[in-house]
Length: 465
Image (cartoon, rainbow, N blue to C red; front, side, top):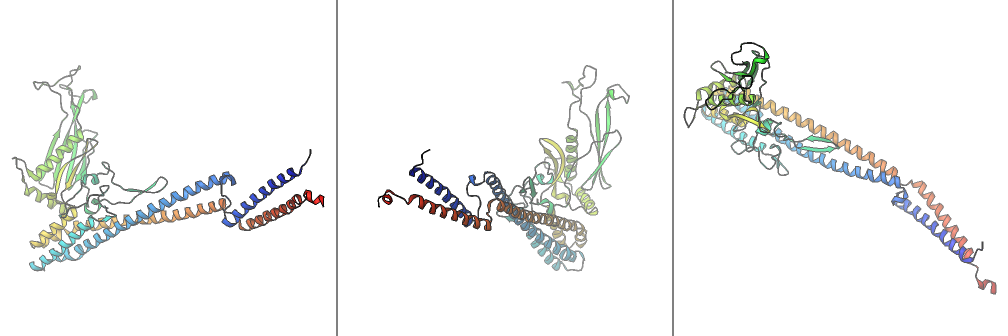
């Protein structure tokens, strides 16, 4: 093979370009401190590095969520602390003073006025906002919880039964990890369960019992057998009827019967099936029971003998007296009884408060102070204690969430540090090694230039001298 001068020069230039590229790469690694600058430098390494970068960015967003959640919780805690301090002043000082019976009517009025200011402060706490959102209104963050008179501004039925609407506001603080950061207002302003469900008896003459706002409710079941039959054989049973016994104290007692409904013809005669058995209409037994109980409670409160029902003050007074004896912080005057539904199905009975239970209790104390009824004020101290205890429980729950959020924040910081260390191992160049590599490539390049100068140096003029 014939080697020409041009071939030698071309090979020399190509080799110089290779050397200078290697020198440029060594310079880039040394001066930037990075081993990888393009995918071709390390295809596997760059893939892992990009995934780590994405993970770090994701953790940074979780960190922002955690910081936002922490701010929300701290704002909630401050509102609850303010709520507790107001209640503590009301219960520990003012209500006790009004209950001891030694103050003059003028002093009682002064105490009542300070209690009014505390009440207004509690209403203000109930409408606390964070970044323009009402923190105690569940997911109805654009609506305040209480009106200025202490009545509810939102439908609290959704709060009383979380199975209807889940009002938890969850912050995502990790992959598949959520933390509920909000507190619904009823946990602070209601100290008793205002909903009731019943368990139907499964055996005849074996009652199921429950208690609801001081009322004792008992259910018994009785089999309905085929017409003309008198046997305990299951084949003869065509339905059941239920007896509801409601007892409030010693005076108010009622028994209500709900029987399976028989389908009738136009003349009111029962319709029989092919086996000469009466056809029983399908009914929602629990819904009927809830309807009867709520109707009974409303009948206790109102006299329904006319189109304009009047309040039955005697029954209300008896019921409220029973509630005070049982230390249940509820005023029957403040409740509306009814049923509530889930997916169109009646699932319980509810005593829906008109005003927040705590606000209503404070107003009862105010009214008794105005009238100088120190014994009645004393009787309301027990129910007031329940709201104090409830406030402490809620505050403890918030504190536990804050501790958890702090732990999550520390964990995220640790995860980011670990990922950055791994990223550094993949991307960063070793400083000492990069210096040696740079000097080596520089020497190679200089040597190539020197050899190239010897190759290019001879010309035709050198031989014509």
